Image (cartoon, one colour):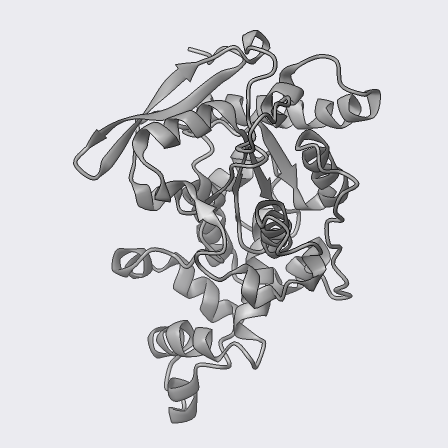
Length: 339
């Protein structure tokens, strides 16, 4: 059965340490005007969620939202087509959902999809003046635990309230471009010694015949082929969950259980970020940082990395990330040789 427009998902009951996810139907268009969504005394304004579903926005915002609305519809249809089982979420499953109570926002961050810059923006929005310029915040500081609150930190009633009332948004990226970006960042940069030690040594030990002692010690020369072997090896996920940098988006953010109001894409990052900032009522008060990288991972670069991956492993890897391709309407890459 199709979920009515305006339907919301929220966490209703606590059974032991598990939260059961159920459907909550709420008509945003019937929400009372002037609901207080700011903690400051006497402050009353329309929430981002009301702004999204009310029909009196500026034409420029409406044009941007038509594309976002189409993505929401496609995501809902894909969820209905490709998911069947009722799932249960634990508090651990909500740790990627960052909460901004001041502006009624919930953002599920996905590594390698501009999440550092979104965290910087949210640190400015939630800081009470401590931060004013996102670009002035060092990247490592943006990832410090405790700088931003996650939904997992709240009680069940508080979680329910926020999922009903707040604008929930996510940014996604072509799955294999994101994967290649993660590999390049974590395994080809000399400064990422923690990743080399934590994952590189394990990958080399398991997937490289007759490795040199130095490689086993440092783990700093993992090839992309070895990385792919590690990902598709059934032992990998039996031993521990994927690292967030290569975990599938549907496993990080649960888009078929949590109804995201805005699905932004890395491929259209600038207009999509502006649309979210407009909905939050902060456009013009801060600038979303732009990437100055000259070697950004795109489809052509991903194709070069996959050129030396056999059709056998390409198919296994595609099956592993298949749900992200389906849910977020990404086509199978033309460079794949899966037959």
